[in-house]
Image (cartoon, rainbow, N blue to C red; front, side, top):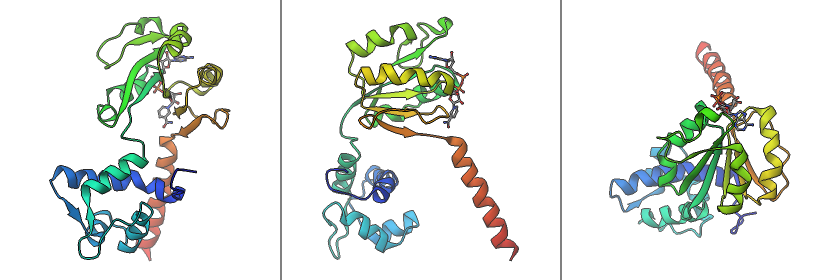
Length: 214
Ligand code: NAI
């Protein structure tokens, strides 16, 4: 459980709040009401008030929410006020796309190395972090503080990473391989499956077609 016992459903909505609040900050807006947020985000004002009440109810009647305060609180709860060192395993299409996405760094996710087995990729430049070979991984994990390992290799290969990651006491794994890996509870794992999101989209398209055919 997190430090303030915020329900997981609220936590899962925080990145979306964060995105909108960041936009307001960049536009120099200092305060926002729950009804304004409701209109922007297409969520009811009462849901917004309930969600934001979990952080101490700092909205004020007639004033709304202080945008910077909201931003800093959500940032803190999501751990975005810290720097997290990440490495990527797999320098293929997916690994490179993640390495090339500049927004991670600005949110404190610092990619310090990319690992692959393909010797042709050793020393490859232009990805913002050096490319190393897999036989350098154990040494690298000993010499560097790695907080997050991103897994971007096929599933039958990904299983081999469990042991070195656990041994190096890495705290978290962002797993893109299409399998649930047997990490112990002290390793936080977030599995990402773009195809599952696409299946949900497909289902919702079907629902929408039914609604409009009525
Ligand atoms: P890719 O074939 O372009 O790259 C895979 C890379 O992994 C290659 O550079 C290869 O040399 C390297 N590799 C293979 N075995 C390795 C090992 N044991 N250690 C280190 N490196 C190793 O494939 P792509 O498109 O980058 O996808 C990577 C994996 O991620 C695939 O298995 C794919 O199914 C999965 N994937 C998952 C997605 C998701 O939403 N969860 C989305 C896209 C891909």
